Length: 162
Image 1 (tube, helix red, strand yellow):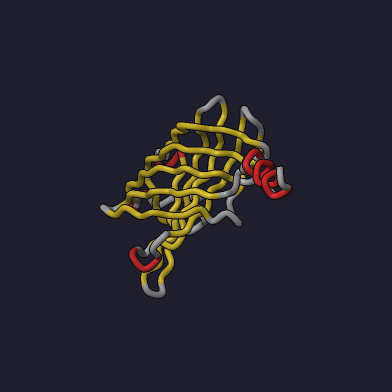
Image 2 (cartoon, rainbow, N blue to C red; image 1 turned 90 degrees about the vertical axis):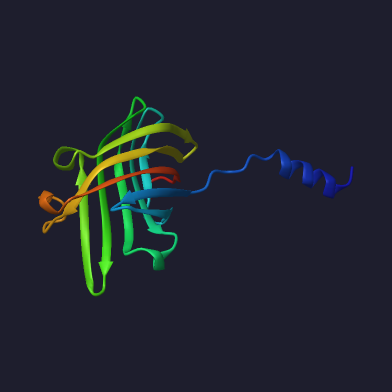
């Protein structure tokens, strides 16, 4: 066997390492927006039975939407999602509006369909539904009179907190 054939067999037998990637689909105000994971800002911590996660994402087509950022955070324990939080940013002209959602005030729910830890990476998929609204104090008090419905799905692989 030549050394090139041996190298090729070694490379084929080596498992591919997980890498940070993912997509989020958001539906709000009659609009469906696809987002891609912003890996440098996203992370997770925990173990095979519990995880705290932060998913930061940007729209795939920035010219097709006034949304510039979507984040989803929460926890997973026993295969169930809890303590979800959303922040999304709308940019209209020179005006930037941050919208926030969480389980207590806006009824935000996250459902986890799969949760797998492989080495230092977490692969997570599921869905979310609830409301988001503007806030003058970074989500502490959400103005529900101006809230809008949101729902969507996510499939991501996250690296650890660094």
